[in-house]
Length: 186
Image (cartoon, rainbow, N blue to C red; front, side, top):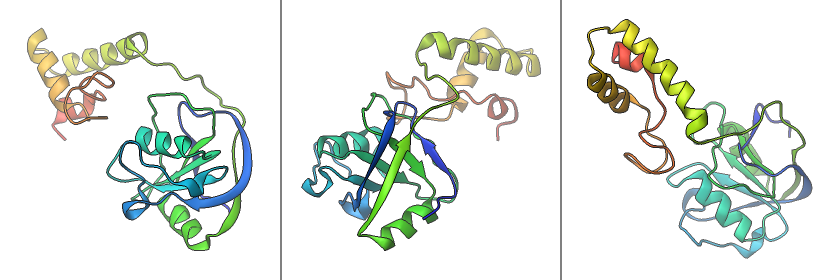
C-alpha cells in the first residue's frame, strides 16, 4: 500500500523495521487500558486505531507487548500528528483514517515502518512554551487593549484547546493557546 500521509510521532525512535502488521486489539482496535497487552504484537508492527485513550497509552501498551513498530490511524479524515510524553526506541507513526482502515482490511500482511530523519528537533518545556504564549498574549492584548493582565490570563486559559487529561494538567497546563479564539470567540 501507498499511504496518503505518514507523520512520525514527536518522540519516536529512529530506524526501520519490516515485519507482520498485526491489529493491536481491544475495543474498536484502540488498545486502551493501562497495562493492556497482546502477545501477538511481539516482534511485529502494531496497527492501532485512534480513540478514547491517549497516544501515549496505546504506544506504551504496544511497546510493552514487544511491538517493533507502531502505526496509529486516525478516527476522522485528515492527517494524524502524534504527541508523546515518553521517548520510544521503536518507530511510531500516524496515518490517515482511510489508510488505516484499508490496511486493517488487508491483514494479515507484511509492512515496513521507518523513521530515518527529521527536519526539526523536538524540544518541550517552559523554555519552548514561553515565547509561543508570550507572542499569543501580545497579539490578543493588541486586539483587546482594555483587558487587564488578569483578564488576559483568564481569556487565554479559558480559550486554550485542551490537550491530554481533561482540564489543567501537569503535562499540558491549560492546553494549546488559541489567540484567534481568544480574539473572536470562535
